[in-house]
Image 1 (cartoon, rainbow, N blue to C red):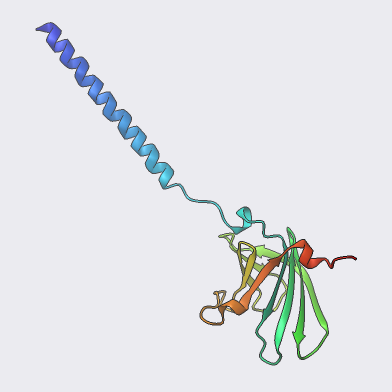
Image 2 (image 1 turned 30 degrees about the vertical axis):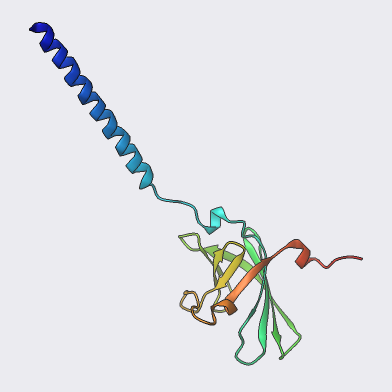
Length: 154
C-alpha cells in the first residue's frame, strides 16, 4: 500500500511539473508575440541619397525637385518649369518624428515634411498628412541611382 501511495505521488508530481513547464513556455511565447517592433524608416531603410520628382504647381507647368539627404542634412533644388529656368537651392538640416517615419526639413516653408518609404519620399500636406486620391502619385519623389545622378562620360 505504501508503495502504491509513493508511486501515485511521484506520478502526480510529474504531471504537475509538466503542466508548469508548459505554462512557462506559453508565457514566453506570448511575451515574444507581444514585443513591440522597433523597426522604422529611420533605422531600417537605406534612405540617404538623391530623390527626384515633379510636383504640381498652381502658376507653372510643374516644380522639378531634387532632394539630397545625407545623415543629418539636406540640399533641395527646385525649378519652376514653364515659368523660369532659375534653380532655387536650399540647404539645411532635417529631423525625424518620434515614430521614425517622417522627416521635417528645418528652415523650409510648409509643406516641408516627407513620409519616408523604401526608395521613395511622399510629400505631406500642410497638416502633415499624405495626399490621397487621383493626385497622390504627383506628390512622390523617387530615389535615383548613382548612374541617374552622374552624367555618363564618353
